[in-house]
Every structure is written in structure tokens, then in C-alpha cells.
Image (cartoon, rainbow, N blue to C red; front, side, top):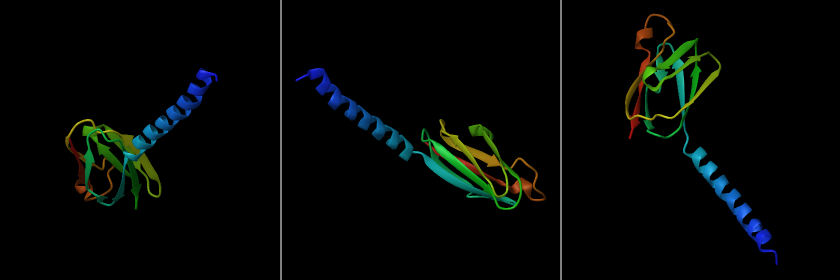
Length: 120
């Protein structure tokens, strides 16, 4: 019996299985957060995240163009009506990080804000 051939027949499928499990596990840990913008609010306005866990934000607007800006986490997007803006990031610091609309949307615009709470 050819030993190197037997080793390859066992090791290669095992390595592929371990790689598949690692990739699946990493994808399962990703947190998806859906945020809706409308005059003059974000829903939800308070979002809890975990430090080190990748996040996918899915932002939609119900009425007009809005901006989504969180300087503390260095993320920003235009949120167009009828479209979904997607952003991926991983919070690397615990704390509270305010976000706000940075495209003027009328009287009441200054009340369009919220915060991320990143736990350790």
C-alpha cells in the first residue's frame, strides 16, 4: 500500500472540512442590523453591539435622502429612498458612539440621531 497516497486521501478531506467549519463559524458570528431612516428619526435609535464582532448595517430610507454618520466608529453612508445602503465594520473599542443624519432633511433634522453601545 502506498502510504503517502493514503495520508493524502485522509488529510486533504479533513483539512477541507476544518476550513469549511471555520468559515461557517466566522460567518455565523456576523451581526446584521437593519436601520430605517425617516423624517426625523432612525429606528432603532439605540443599537447594542459587541466589541470584535463583525457588523453588517442595512440602512433604508422611507421618505427621502438621509445621511448616516457615526464619526466615533468611522462609518458614513448616504441612505437613499427605496434603496439599501450596506456597510460592514468591526467595532474595536467598547463605549457609546453617537450617530446622526448629516444631510439636512428639514425642521427637526437636529433631532435625528441615535447611538451604538459597544460592550466589551
